[in-house]
Length: 174
Ligand SMILES: [Fe+2]
Ligand SMILES: [Fe+2]
Image (cartoon, rainbow, N blue to C red; front, side, top):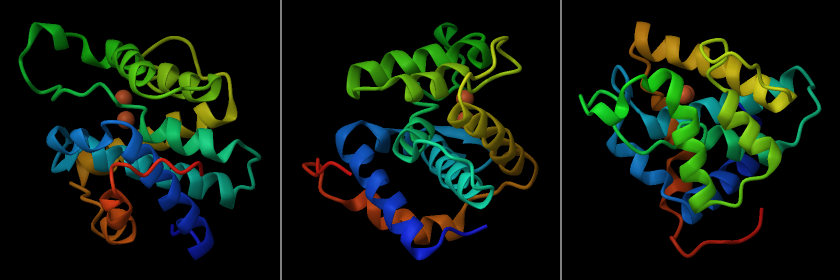
């Protein structure tokens, strides 16, 4: 389940772009499942969504797919904290994430749909675009791997870690 070197280069350019223009790196301070932070959960969901789209030859808007997936859990808190504001996290965090994304990033319609609907079927309305369906599916797979097998994405960290160290001022259009 590995992107080709060309796909990986594209993915890392997009990761660097999103990381340099949002607070994506803050998510490395929050636990998602098991030993995985929200940052690496989101990178994994983006990486495997692109992998699946390419392998199944699903026509989709790649930039929106990757940036929407990278930002799908951009709620920017640790959901394990017993803060009353985090109650019903499972149902509410897509809206929290979308609110933060709209503050920090010019989200297009596809990205907003990915973020808003990714918790289906816990939330009632399914994603109405292919990109959203892909992320919704891959998110479940990654969540399961992180919870059941304590997946820590060691390989992915080697493949993509450098993209996160791109300068903060990086704002090149990808
Ligand atoms: Fe989520
Ligand atoms: Fe997620």
